[in-house]
Image (cartoon, rainbow, N blue to C red; front, side, top):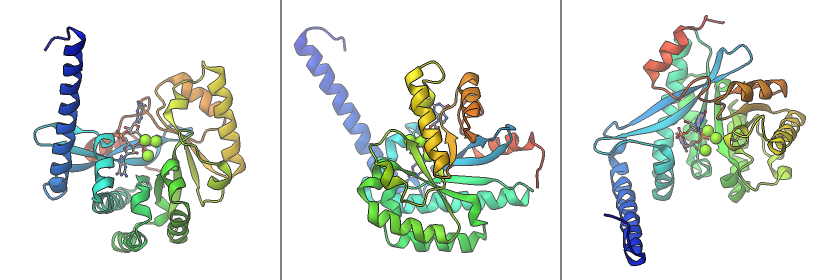
Length: 279
Ligand code: C2E
Ligand code: MG
Ligand code: MG
Ligand code: MG
């Protein structure tokens, strides 16, 4: 339909709007069966250190919808959080990722995995037990597991979040602050939480090294993180100059399309095969 007069445009807009709403409704409904129908998959994206060896991977959820194709997590995680399904889906991701680490172990690779955990999941009382259970069941070394939490959601559930984090930390699992710099969290609060890793959001990385303002802010984040004893991971590294700048300023690990996109388990195995086995 062509966009013509003002009135038409309103109509056109509302049609688009209702299409969006219909898609959302459809996704909401179909998501309920996605897990049991085996439509969910975990992809892995490498995190590399100085030597450009893969030292860890982030587990990223994918939904292969039978009619609508690949649905990105940004479109369905929130729906799962609203419906409460994130609990079940999150547990499944945790299980998959821990089994994957074991399977890499059996191939002689000591690879860590970072798992995104919704704060909605974290603050449910049974989460701590389900982590304990999965660790016991898979017998994975807990120090190879890292949970990524986004700062904004944590700020809304500070006390409950902190209590769960402390219990899980005691099992040997590490914690990362994801998307750092995009929320409005107070650093005073964040530094009281038991984080091990800070992930600089890609909106900062994108501006490096050309934008002097972003360079200054990123340097400040790096120095703050170092003072707090945190390992720093840069997200969304797409260009060689970005990686060079980040390295020069003490960033520990790089993650982004420059090094590799998130890929399926078989694809990831091929990437690993190109690397020497380091014990
Ligand atoms: P995130 O945890 O911040 O993950 C990083 C996102 O950046 C991923 O998007 C990744 O594919 C993308 N990315 C990586 N490198 C680059 C790059 O060089 N350039 C650009 N432009 N993007 C890059 P993805 O996989 O679509 O995931 C989006 C978000 O969905 C994640 O953001 C995370 O918050 C959430 N998510 C994914 N899997 C899970 C999960 O299992 N559980 C929960 N609760 N959330 C998840
Ligand atoms: Mg993440
Ligand atoms: Mg992130
Ligand atoms: Mg994100």
